[in-house]
Image 1 (cartoon, rainbow, N blue to C red):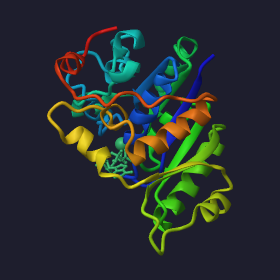
Image 2: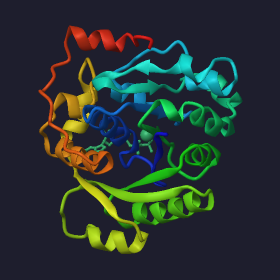
Image 3: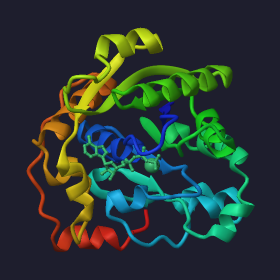
Length: 260
Ligand SMILES: Nc1ncnc2c1ncn2[C@@H]1O[C@H](COP(=O)(O)OP(=O)(O)OP(=O)(O)O)[C@@H](O)[C@H]1O
Ligand SMILES: [Mg+2]
């Protein structure tokens, strides 16, 4: 049985989607079978970070009972598999996110890890994304509003019976005034799985014409190295940094969303 882990934060914009994509690719580079699920049913953007632009069948169709989950799984970059969320607001309004748990658990045995990208906040779709998992990883930045929201989301996960396994501190600049790693460990009463520096390459990698997750585009930049270390902890083995990839013809084929 694979591990199902939801990536959560409480506060928005702290890097959940970027980390889901890059951690997923790093785990796939460890030879594991990885499924990434965009459970941000209102503001889907994991596809953009993966460099995949169109998707005939999405999680919306699955949650509406109009398609099976297997029909919504696509080949993504770096060997990951991927379930996109839909962009239609009309479908979003009708989506029953409570079905997510049974949908995800129905394919659990096919993968080593299923990483679910959750929306921010603590509203119903966030709860559904957490409840679909058995474990959560909490993302925070090293400042008090973000850590305060991380504490809230940890409590939400525990109430839902989902195990918070640790924290990732993102956007670290090592500036005066940042909350220190050991203080975040104490405040959250959770181990810190890793710290990721603020690194422009994260944004650059999806702002170019043919987007690719940073870890494929710049495998040896500081944020990629930090993410690989976290993936090594989760995978329990070393992962080689791959060759730097320039998104060319081959990657453009990926962006056409080749069906599995
Ligand atoms: N370590 C980092 N260094 C620099 N920029 C980063 C870093 N991590 C994420 N970013 C950038 O921050 C922005 C927000 O990241 P992302 O979309 O992954 O956050 P999120 O938590 O998923 O947001 P939301 O709550 O809206 O879903 C993006 O532009 C991303 O490129
Ligand atoms: Mg996001």
